[in-house]
Image (cartoon, rainbow, N blue to C red; front, side, top):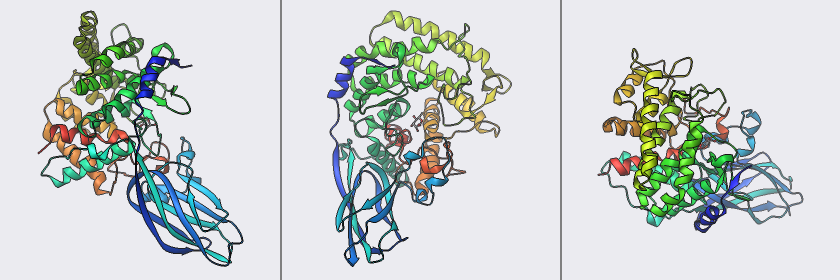
Length: 487
Ligand code: RAM
């Protein structure tokens, strides 16, 4: 059961953005197709929108329906995979594929769903031998709530960085719909971990700050029992928090609110949503032991950090909590909430000490996590962001080959932020160039949900066919490059 705050939800609804549309046409070259033939249309760029196909026939009057299979793909590689061969654990229904019967030709066939794609493949499953199909072309009505006219140029003399920024902005653009979606192919919804990073990129790019405000009110307006902010939100048919909750994602309501305030000076919203933010601290506290150490858990997904099932989350969770508590302290100070500010200060010192006492291994000079004292990048990164460690742990973890690595651009975002926080700007830029630049080199039109340079076709879902290749949490370079590496 979710809890509703109707006043908050009304505010969110009032902030519903206008969707901008753009028509992009591609020719089919009047290709003639018979049974078993296929044709791939390349729109030349990543798009999100509805598609209309122009179809006609040649030969006798069509005397049987045309039976077509259509596949929409963000990357060409998706077209080589068959949905029937996918046996992963998230639903195959995410695969953008249709089978359709066409009774009348010629026709303009408008397809039923919104797709995220660059390529459309048409395959004739069957057709009468008395006529052939002619594909005239296709038109996409692309949608986004991002206003291209509002995008300031990225000033840099470096062409590689400009290209990385361009792909990052396009990623953000295509994820900006009625809300900040995580991925327009999958999951097509608002997740708070993604929102936080999108919002940061938005402040440097499209500056549609009301869309961030809308998302904050959505999260605060429909919560899980006890006022817990859910990890994600559904907008249709009705606004409702997803019943998934994760330790870190609930807490991220706090920095998302703070960053919004810093970007806008909207103190009214800060004040109104502060109780919702504070509630996340109160709820998260239940997960700590009496010494101030977060209790580990073997419940899958209790805390996210990265798309890595092998990763132990305890140290990372402690770091996330410290980071969010620190940020809550900034809100309390901005609102002159002295009582909470001093409570926070005290609690922060205790929990930081608990991290140093129980999670820091002096012999290794690194943080370890869980009963098995696992070494990971995630633990070091979050301890830096939480204010408990310096750049030395980042150097040391890089020198080890037995540590659990990073899987997503999401964790890489936090790595880059940690490098910047400890003053290692050159290294941060190198990561932007090698990691996000690595996707550009592989032909990315938009940045991917997952990227392992050593194995670009990796998937935590059991098949790349359900991976998202335009994913919000990967738009980081637009934020970092514009904020820290301009000119
Ligand atoms: C996946 C999505 C989304 C992310 C959640 C935790 O389903 O990729 O972006 O925030 O996981």
